[in-house]
Image (cartoon, rainbow, N blue to C red; front, side, top):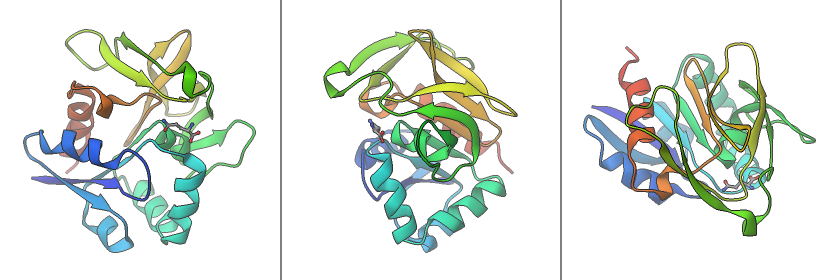
Length: 192
Ligand code: GLN
């Protein structure tokens, strides 16, 4: 059994924990402290408000230990605000964790009122188009280095992968489709 944490400072934490509980060989736990961080084999950075979560990461003393664990190969998946936290470039703003070779633009798909659902294929995920929920969602303007796109919506990149890192600008935890969580669990289970 591998332990996957969900960063539990702000945002859609409970929804991710519920999805993880449904996966075989995975146990799920909320992560709030450096001690929690030491116990996990993988981490989800949930959606929410990236400015707030970024500040709380520093206040809770998690930023530096998390950057260190990412550098040593911890699988981390950022959804929406979480993807913004991972990016090494945030258009017009300073980066947070700055560890993934993507440039991301906040609120790029519009305001809360422009939130939408769709279904789109994701590279590496079998079984047809994946249902996606976008809420004041960012898009990924470009990938470089070891990062590469996995999915596009309306001509913009909405999912990317780089070694142990995964970024999606949509919210799979707000659907009843487990495939994106299973994809991440496979990244965690395949680590020795
Ligand atoms: N708009 C938020 C931000 O920029 C992200 C929205 C979300 O996570 N649903 O941080």
